Image 1 (spheres, rainbow, N blue to C red):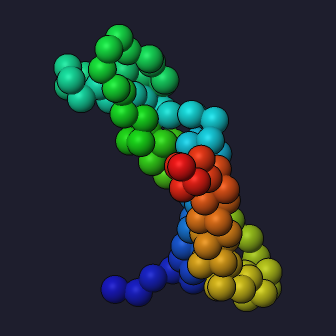
Image 2: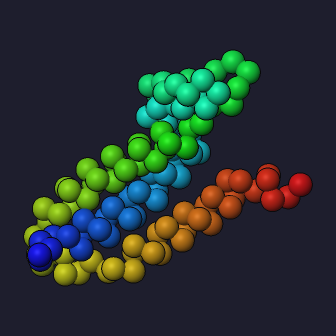
Length: 112
């Protein structure tokens, strides 16, 4: 089985966009759905429940994965001349920058 020529472009784009969208989803609570562990129920979009603690993490993952898949599919359509100029290092450099942004976002938890 051989991979299509556009797969590296898709993979690099997916990795970069997923990291950025995950940061945005976590920072602004843009969950596609909410899971309530106490009742075992899923709710569409963000829903604040009563006394129990809802889990938004699953919704953030799905939101980011859908957005990154769409961006990767669109990026797969670029011409081969442009695709050859895409640096594969972006697939680790941008997620590392997002990790630093998360450290800044969650700095209150580290400075107690």
